[in-house]
Image 1 (cartoon, rainbow, N blue to C red):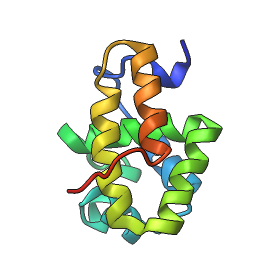
Image 2 (cartoon, rainbow, N blue to C red):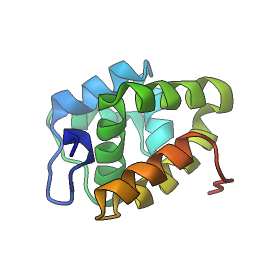
Image 3 (tube, rainbow, N blue to C red):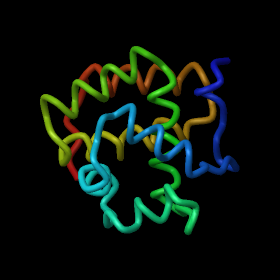
Length: 124
């Protein structure tokens, strides 16, 4: 099983990983904050180890972390950001969070591929 597809429910995400995700996605703190529905001050605190993400924000960061580790998925997220913008990508991230909660690794991988290939309409 791919490292990025493991069950991540107990994983923590560190400041340097959050910064790396933002860098890979080529987003400013402000745009990254919009994607996660938090303030840019919150992004600053996470990236500087002043606070930790929790709940759905942690889950979304874990999902993004897994996505940027797989070239095909990273390219799909970058394409979504370019073509559909922050709000649509944030909605798709909601669906991806649900996919990553699936325990069966093969089903999880298929769900992620389906979502990233645009199969379905995901509205917030």
